[in-house]
Length: 439
Ligand code: XIL
Image 1 (tube, rainbow, N blue to C red):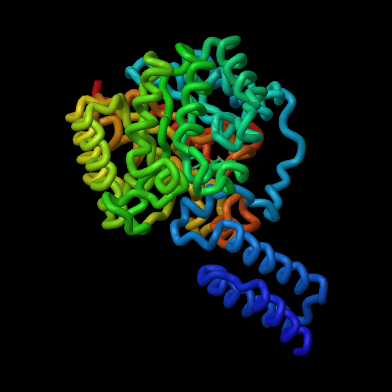
Image 2 (image 1 turned 90 degrees about the horizontal axis):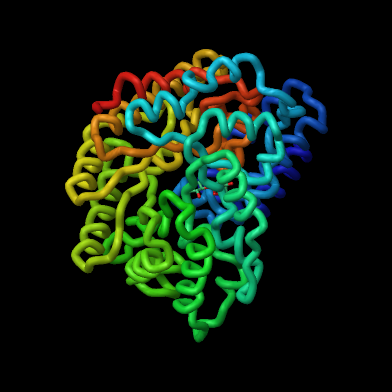
């Protein structure tokens, strides 16, 4: 029991957040059980180190109460990614069977939809993955390489290496592109957040939008100019997120951003992108209400805007339905004359209790259909992108929530599995294009 007290003391020092404390209680039971069952000291140490990681991540994520904000924060370091072994060197026969007329992009385009995925630019050196992307995607978006932290090593400089590689890849293979994103609370470089209050952040902001958009002018289908500006929990007027941009550029930062964006690239569809709008629940209803109010205000002030992105980071086994709330939201956007894009679709399956893979895959596939069925009722929906294309690269394995809930179970959340074989989610998406699309 001396060992037990030592563990407890360490975890206290970590200063875990409420969620982590809850997790700690579970772990504590596990540790006690294992000690009683005569587990080795090594096993106990492994459990302790997991607790330490949990505590560390809670601190790094600023213990933010919003799950999405915490899971997409910078520095998720300390969490090992799953070890999938060596990636396939060539596409498996199952992936070859679904290319050409059988691909996602072919089925989508027959129904007036552009479909595609987010890519990590460096991973495109994986030849099989690059082939899969070209086979399946009509449009791609870089996961991180056009964000501030990807482009701006310092106030004076831009590093376009990865972004240029992204546009070169798209041009080489004739793929359309999306731009993501010019203002996001979770991608503020350290040098920028450290600038004194007297610094002219407004001028830096405008210069950044002009420089980045002008460089790729005429080559971008749509730009997520501002990403995730709403967080009612922050208690600001209009449900605005109390972000770096809100504080340092000012509450009119969206107007400024979209006006600058239109001037810099008049061809790009200017998009407002956000999450937490998919479910029939009070939280999502409030978020939808705030977003619509924000967008209506922009339209009244004649701020240029063309489309609204619904991220679509949804969950299998959610207690809430995807239905009326989302349908009414999409219709409201359509009636404002704007297009609707599903920009970051994936299905987090951490809440499925069973470990059985075929059960999980069916559940995930059904969840894809639940969202697409509602989305495709509206002709305003023109675009569907998944956030990643294979389970090998998904960001859903990185966040603190995953490591708390399913540390040993890599997510099966995308249309291709870690061996690049199509999953039931692939077939569910294809079927949705064919059967749920109204036009
Ligand atoms: C995520 C990336 O996928 C991760 O690699 C990164 O560490 C954090 O950001 N909503 C968004 C995306 O708009 O930019 C986020 O991307 C996922 C949530």
